[in-house]
Every structure is written in structure tokens, then in C-alpha cells.
Image (cartoon, rainbow, N blue to C red; front, top):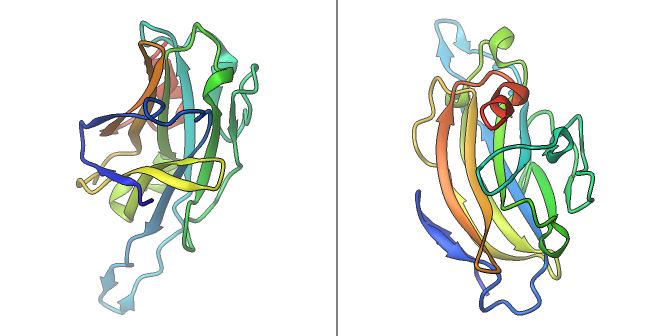
Length: 198
């Protein structure tokens, strides 16, 4: 079964109608944009190191525990329900560049949202932004069989932005849903972005 393609702002049920769905993989992918052509031919572009992170937020949208920020320097939530696959430094190659494993049944009751974001590592010093990235997407797969449930292509113009708020898994009425957000941000580091939710 092919996954459902979402548009920005769309929300969809994940667990309703998917009996037994508990372990999902949130995959994020991107490619370097084509290098610019300069006076002396093609300019070599520095690798853009994008980092995916998950913020586990309470019902008021707040990050109440430091360990609930799962990212390249904290790969696992204290409850082990959200686990980061590790850092991909370039975005080259096909398929997901980074993955975050989520066990929906193991998420503590005080966590109502798992917000998935991507930052450009050292964006300020490297003078990089999401204008250097193309074909970015977020998708959710069933960890059993790796079948794609949903995909959201981040196709807006994100020039000038150093962070992307991609989407969120959220709890509603005992079920889990997904919202496609696709919003750019100027946070230079994941810790700066996380501060907004404290």
C-alpha cells in the first residue's frame, strides 16, 4: 500500500484504522541543491549538515524535561520511546538521511506531541540556509515491514531559514495523528529552537 501524500497544514489519523500500530519510523530526507555557476565554472559547495531532532512536548506545547529533546547529542529519550538513528553529515544518497524511531505506546502520558524539526549544523559560521537544500521531505513508516504510511514534501521556498519545523505526531482522544507543518525558522541551533518551547 502506498503512503498518503500530505499538503502543508493537513492532519491525518495514524493509529485510528491501523489496529496494532505502535512502532513508527519518522524518516527525513534532503539533497544538496545544485552548485551555483560562477564566472570560472561551477563553484564547489560546502556540505550542508542537516540535523533532525524530536521535541517531546506536553499538552501545553512545552518541553518540560531536558532529556525530552532527542537529537544528535542526546539520541534517546529517558523513557526510550523516541530514539534517533544518528547523524548524517551530507545528505548525499537516496532514501532517508536521518530517522527517528517512535514507540507510540511507550510515550509517557505527560507527552502529547512529538515535534520533528531539522536544523543546519553551524549555520551561522558556515553562512548556510535551507536555500542550499532541495527535495526535503518527512515521512512516517510502520516499523513492522517499513511500509510508508504518510509523506509530506517540504516544497516551499525556505531561503534564509536555518531550521524547519517539519511536522508533529500528536495525541488526541486516545489516538495518534500527524500534522504536516512545514514552517521555516531562524533558530541557528537546536538548543535555540528548543528554548521557544520551555
